Figure 1 (cartoon, rainbow, N blue to C red):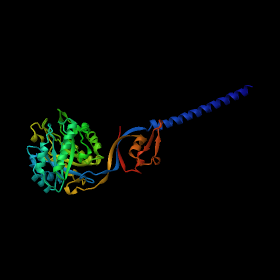
Figure 2: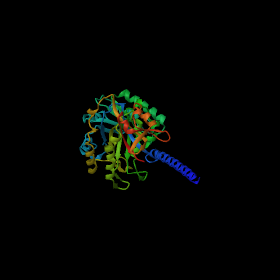
Figure 3: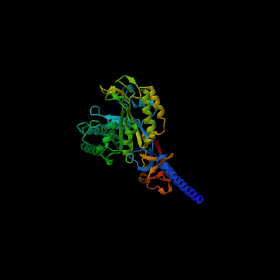
Figure 4: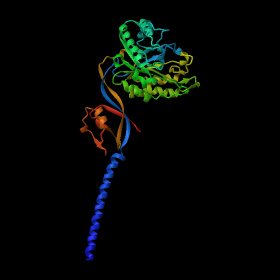
Length: 410
């Protein structure tokens, strides 16, 4: 009897042990799946995604390439001659920039001379705090003549002293109508100072009365008695993504300080790094920016309180650097390079949050359906996490859409 009981107990213990092992095995397998999806390899990752899309080209927008231009009128070092600027940087400029003021004016003779030099005139017209349109009428009277090439007019850039957005927009619209009543072959640029980009939407007059969108970027050494840092990625991203689908864009003013009278110190290497961003990195990151206009001026010669020297022509180290950068065939230098096309495929830029599983980047289904309506999701590698969220492998999308991306690791 004892022997039978012992066998039964042993059998029972063996069964319980096997069941325990089976349960343990199931738990381990379940835990391993959980780790593989939600712990071991799941990671948030920001990316800059570029998606090729068809866009309607703007007025005189090139199929590809970037127009160059410069403002040199106040540069005593080169006698205000753009030909000297071009010689120093070893590159012909497409635009010659003028600042229109009531005191100095701008004659049709100056515009014709500009065109004889194979330049496109680019005229900056500021709006006074009293929002008087008298300077506009004076400018039209000064330059009213038929021209074979376009005249670009930067109409009432959004500067620090402007307020009352509704009144501003009405004034801008009225000025736009007046210009087109009296001048032919005009391209209207609406621009914003980089310090005003976040209230820019309040002042934007509307796509129908804007041909190009511009941004004015001045990078002094100090601002408000503190070292000035220009956050290029943050500032340009907001502006660029606001217009990339609707307008050709232009850096309508670029000025990088290499010397400040605040401390009488030169910062040539820092200036070169900043110039390298605008003339090297920017074309790759922002493919619909189609122009860069450099403001080659020493502010100390313009205003009594001016401290920064923005001239690249005053320092051999700077203009030698620009010679190298401007060899890039991407930079367009003649008015004859102004093509007329209806539409073109361009890369649209989006900054989005993705998820990494192992080393592969996956896109949430909501992003996927919003950005890639024609991509068959059933053909893509899919992962579903423990919450039921579906993710699709971004590299698989390349089989169905023209895209590329850059990771921004968190």
